[in-house]
Structures are given as C-alpha cells and as structure tokens.
Length: 95
Image (cartoon, rainbow, N blue to C red):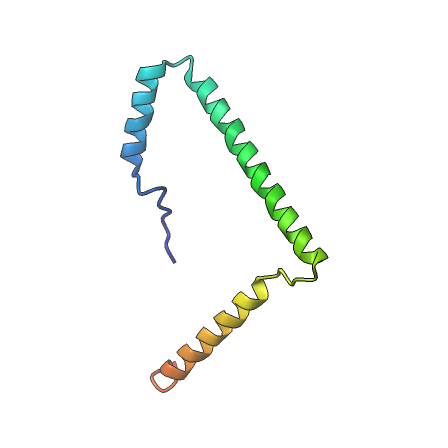
C-alpha cells in the first residue's frame, strides 16, 4: 500500500512556489476571495456529481438493473486470492 499520496505529480516545494507566485500576482487581500471562490466551485461540482450519481442509481433501480458493483468486485478479489493461494501454496512456510 502506498503510504504517501501523490497529488497531480506535484511536490510540496512546487505547490509552495505556485502559492508564492499567486500571492505575488494577486496580493494578500485577494487570495482569500480566490480560495473562497474555488471552494464554492468545487462544492458545486461535488453536489452536481452526487446528483448525477443518485439519478443514475435511481434510474437503474427503476429499470430493475442491479447497480451494486461491490458484489462483482468482491468476486474478482476472491478469484485473485484463490489464484495466489494456488501458486504460493507449495511455497509458503509454516511458522
């Protein structure tokens, strides 16, 4: 498992540099307004995608389509586990 999240392949120093440039271009008094606007925009996008998801789910239920993907994913995970157990079974050491 990856312990460190990668955000658009940008490191902390690069983000700091971008924030410094934004501060120079727009000034300290405009940065909070810009951040607030970006936050509102992101919230609107999140709400819109949640609305779309709920509409798709409701439409699928109305049509009788099973929309629960977790069952399919769980089946595939179980298959992979079985395949790995078959391959590593004779190699495993008992401690």
